[in-house]
Length: 529
Image (tube, rainbow, N blue to C red):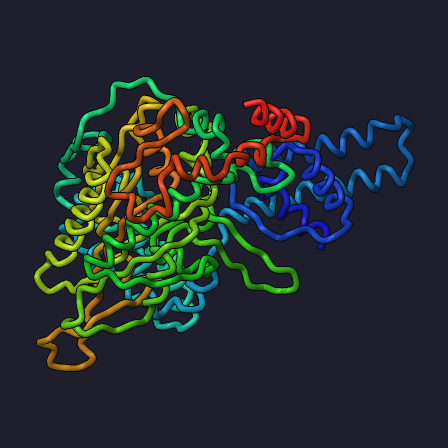
């Protein structure tokens, strides 16, 4: 168990991302095999694992060098055991990145029958497919897939056929979606601007974190002994703005006939993978939860899109009931972070609140999901325009579509404190990519047989990614005295004005100061005023 904890710990960011004494002492107790460690891990890039491994090796090196003496036979045995442990750990990490979700193996035959193999085996499609895969930077071995399909068709041995089916499923899952003509037509990897609203402010303003830290609205540093790396606290008017943005977004969506759904944040990995996101590999965004004494591994959801899609797994709709639109407020967990200067602070964090849109359509005319996709885009643009922020909508090139998207729009807003456009929203049409993997189907009106079912199309979009909108609004509407003049459209959804919130929490800044002497100094300064 101790060795498993070591391997587990070294796959997380406890050491690589948080250099505080508390986490080091906890890590040391795990290295010694003592105590129980909270089993929350993050699949990491090799560089992060390497950093953790280096720290672990340094700990052992320092302890062994503390008392220099000639090696005994017992010491040699211990060193050999340590070397073997290192090899085992390296083997573990190598296997970890190639681990296949057992769900797909257990359900290989059913999943195989749902995937679109005809698209891959048609000789007329070969050149276009290879070009599309290259544009999307998708590693698809088309020759191998076609070869395995031929072998499976010829095979009469049940075990051999089963093994071939499993291999094909694991390859076919990650064959990307088709690409919309407008996206395909974009030359290179630069998104195409298709809409712009407003004008950038010319004022010189403070960057979000600097402004909020100055007035005590935010605490996002020196949290190593309290919370995970890249965590943050919102206080007073900033916390009230978070809730106001959520209510504003939900109000708009309910008026557009969205059904509100509350979703779980802990889900199984095959649900995430069905939506087009890998849960294992060198670069992914997934946090894993491991429970001692259980073989079950689950993940923290990166977006409500996954949980909503999962709730529809194996569902059959009547065509008359489509399209259907859902919205959800959820906490989103992303393992990826960034060290880029322009993505500092709340711009890219490990967890945040988001209002998600998710839609399901039929596929009779071939344009149903396109129409819903454009509706999602119009809702996003309308909401952001009503906030009076400067933004632009971008048609994304194939290289930005990932596995699941057929077409995708990103919306970027002007953030004057950072002097840059930053992404605040996106919406994607995934056609039948997700529904084939999740087995979401519908019964056409003209179906002669009740069992004649078709796969639905799915569309998703971000109505409100709270941290990015907080950054945008505060940087665009801040005042030197700490006030933020919020857009009129938000006021019905706020408990009070920003200024009233400031005056009702005169000591809120002292609560975020780091030590007692700083707090006393702040309170004394307030009393003198």
